[in-house]
Length: 136
Image: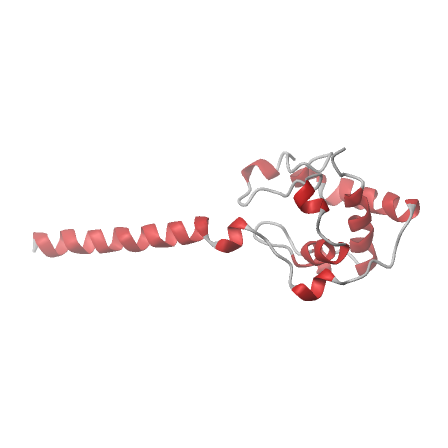
């Protein structure tokens, strides 16, 4: 009886370890890639008025996780897995406007998908503001 209980505990431990590792080491956690169809979406807005609208939205909706300079260091972002993106990084800035728009719209993990909260226009303004956060 003791042998069966020990074996059962071992099997249960292996199963839990597998679920734990899958949750923390899944490919989705490592790299977030927008679908190919998003790459070619064209931003219909440009200019300082759009950037200013995006900045206003960013300050009220995004700063808490992504931080004031967009580096992923906001107060609420410190506890998130995966951590918030650094919008000033070359990796983020290298993405097309369409890819950024898709990610803002869809969300992932702890980041809410904004498509049901912000209008399409507001999400494009956010993309334009993100471009101003590029590391110099």
